[in-house]
Length: 220
Image 1 (cartoon, rainbow, N blue to C red):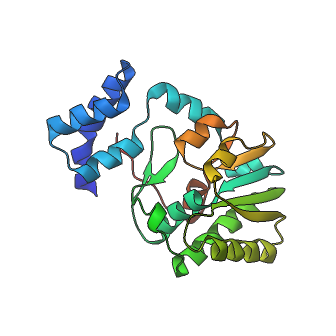
Image 2: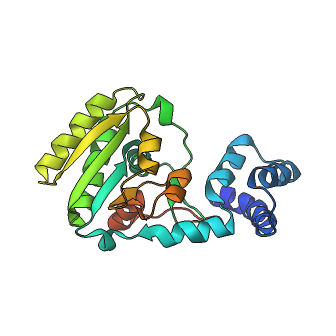
Image 3: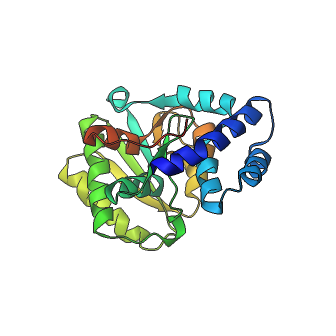
């Protein structure tokens, strides 16, 4: 991992240099990636990690810590949160991105299946919400995902065990619902498009990482 971070550091600096001067992100990554002859997987990491500076500042201002959501209602982007926590539990790399949010680069969203690690991820997510003393939890799952109904049942069971007030639902247009969330909810997601559309956000995987004394990698 150290060698990968070292390899990507110079390309990352060059891309950030271009973004600071107003060049488009996609074109900048393509140009720099071609120059350094980066592989597709390496370009994918840079695409996930690097965020244009103005966007990064705006997103970071919306981010609340787990201590700041006490008494608040949470609307969780279920798969986004759980897949990142699964990555941590499976010892896959998580990246601390330029906007302050933690993301994985596995790209397993559409191929996700419920496993024992999923069950543990649900427990970790609900535990951090319980410890944060939130007033209400609504978890939204994409109904087009395989086994989303089973996952919803698992989450409901864990919420009940922890005496957390809340609900779990599936939706055919989960991203739309999250982007148009009632402002009284703090949205739990690391999806940049959703973050840009809502008022307040919490990064639950990052909260779990901090609770466990783990860390996410950075490209400086």
